[in-house]
Amino acid sequence: MECSIANAKEIQVENGGIFTFLPFSMFFLFGGITSLNDIVMPKLKDVFNLNYTEMTTVQFCFFASYFLVSIPASYMIKKNGYMRTLVLGLNLIALGCVSFIPATWSGKFIVFLLALFIVAAGITIVQVTANPLVISLSTRKNVSTHLTFAHACNSLGTVVAPYLGAMIILTHHSADSLLGKISAYFSRENISEGAVNISVCYGLVASLVAVWSFLTWINRKKLKEDYCSEESILNAVELFRDKKFSLGVAAMFFYIGAEVTIGSLLVNYLVLPNTLHLTAAAAGKHLAFYWGGLLCGRLLGIIFLRAITPSVLLAVYGSGAFFLVILSILTTGGIAGWAMLTVGLCNSVMFPLIFSLTSMNLGARASEGSGLICMAIVGGALVPVLTGRLADISSLNIAFVIPALCYLVVIYFGAFSYFNRSK
Image (tube, rainbow, N blue to C red; front, top):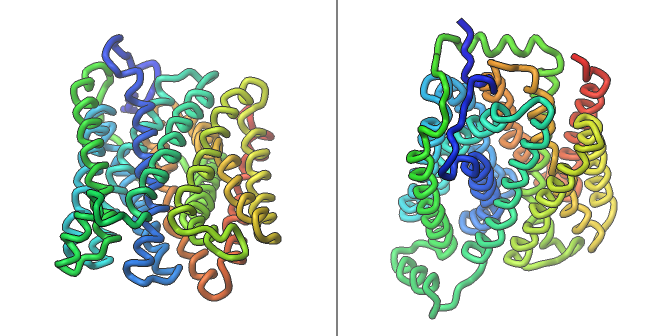
């Protein structure tokens, strides 16, 4: 028996409430929390005196969860439905955020990594659920547009969260401020100000996520869906027999690897004398331009998709990202810094276009495909560490060659999808 939970024809939505907004709000939420890593990493590097390789283990720990949790998450959807699975993921995110408090008390880097892994596991469940949910509520004609709009909501979160996070985590707070008083209190226990700022930031996030979880739970019956769980993980792996699906998963792996690598190292890159030579706090706030580029690019992408096929748009944006990274590597000063920040504009439509091009023909197996595609997000765990290692043995500037090469895979997938668009 073939499950039909992810078939758009099998899903009905009751009018009323906030359900029509809720699926898109999930993208805002997990986008914002994920982008906080780019603020946390330079602070942890300072607190624990880490090198680039050690610093990028933050992203390794975070994005490894996609590899470990994505397939189980897709089967949670089949067993429990979209809404209950979303609630489970949100609760796990809140638990991970609260775990930063004991991590601060411990003063150990490994405990911070554990807290991040719990947060990431929850985000994985939410993302694996939210993507096929939007696809299932769309038609074949508008699926790319709807998914691009959903990821525009994601980008809004990635613009807001790093800016606010930098104000809390990377800024030195005066003794008269609330955070300054909290830091002064914990300094008596030999707990650093940086660790305290991180735990305060994630404590606020935990409160926000708890509200989101409650709203999702009370709206769980708005979605009418069938549950079944007869298929095994081995059946999902059969999807790799399709060449386009396999290439799509590879493109997702390398795209996420490139995007996460650049976002993770941007603060360290922008403080260098041969780029913008900013302070850590100012560089953290400049991440809003990088992630803001994603927001603008996705909004433009919605317009472009009316006239340009998704595969061509993906290849064009991928080419832009490749040339901007190369430009940044070969130049210095403002050109180098702003070229790298502008890569965010080109990254904008890559996730939704890769996801929709890879999964649009899966029909009833969309939740399984979503799990496998989201497993490819493990690229965000491996590529940053490899880039960090190259930065340690050469320079941060040269190390950006690795994400530049990743974009070539994205360009190839876009071209392949165009010439095989009838399949």
